[in-house]
Image 1 (spheres, rainbow, N blue to C red):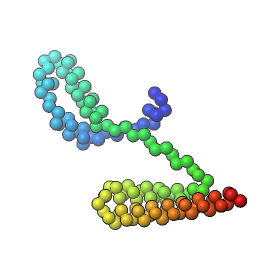
Image 2: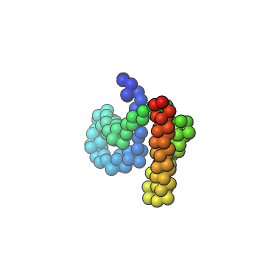
Image 3: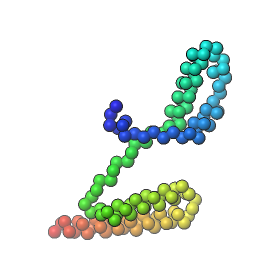
Image 4: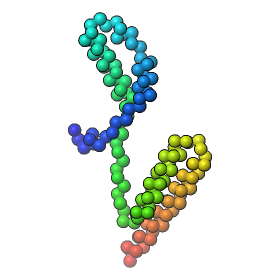
Length: 124
């Protein structure tokens, strides 16, 4: 097992799994007379549907701390990310969209300004 596999997270969509299993035709299972083969078929089928309903997510790399990124900027980046999540949960809400976008634009300008100031100080 390599480092990437250790860091991966798996998320199962149980609603998709339930729908998938309910929509599957189980007549082939009922036609098998041997209990062991019947159980193997059931287990393979269920395992297949679990795999199909599971998403593997690699974690994002941590933000490399640049010298010009202050702790206040990091806090505002976290706030921006939370505002984005709130907006995405209610995608049709125009007020949440405008709130996120205006905050994001202000933050981008702050970051650019902070970077310019830092570069001026260090270039001297």
